[in-house]
Image (cartoon, rainbow, N blue to C red):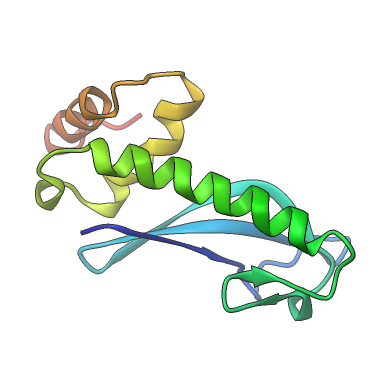
Length: 120
């Protein structure tokens, strides 16, 4: 079963000192990261998957929770999750951006490409 959680990379600090919030997609011992548009000023503002010590923390947490819920709904639509890897799961983001609402069809396409040696 794939899991989703919010995270930051402490080692990947932007030039301005900020950190990007990422969604970690974990499945079968692999992890892929989906970037979000949310930034925090320092790693001290992020703890246990929540943003803190900011005036807009509750609003950001609410938006990020909605985003996680949307991805979880898309994951729940995928049948036979056990046959996919986290790398293939990463394409949820790609499918969502392309407005492909049948996530199962997208996963099948990606699965066929990755197992035939094709990418992208």
